[in-house]
Image 1 (spheres, helix red, strand yellow):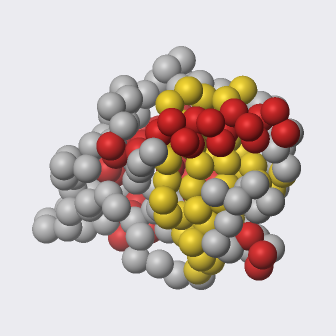
Image 2 (cartoon, rainbow, N blue to C red):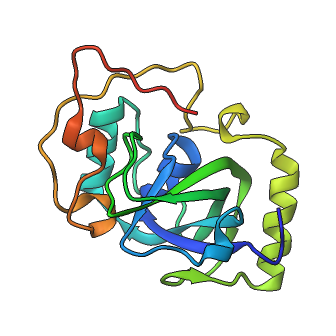
Image 3 (cartoon, rainbow, N blue to C red):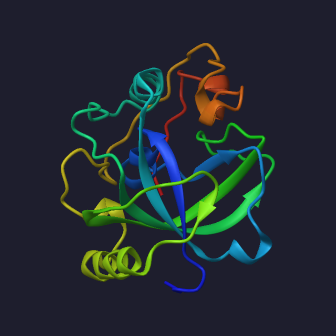
Length: 193
């Protein structure tokens, strides 16, 4: 993980949890990141706000138990992910557009790192960056290998269900993630990374 290129990205909960624990491989935005960030690292920050409708939809769509608002830490960095690319369309069930930041090599930190978040991409304070690096080194693997409560397990298989599109999902961008728009419950199964 490059210290020069890691930037913080604050997300409304439970979207940060979905990246760290539920295999969310696309972060939906209205804007593209700076080109120099592609291939770099993002510190996934769980903001203070909570979206219960999103939690309910994630649970219904992906068949996972989303920890409650009380169970999810806020105001902390919970994971690190590599920004693998930028897309305007994707087959990922998490894509809702208009711009998708594809995420790879997600590592949940064993201990969340307290930090004030911000809008857009932001620079981590040096002391926070040091604790994030220490957590990343301690984890030494992707989130699905960590025995942490409330997280996704690689062997679980779920089937998306049909739900009506909800305009408030996808980070408030007016479009629901692809899984909520196009889920076909008959034979489709979603498998995390």
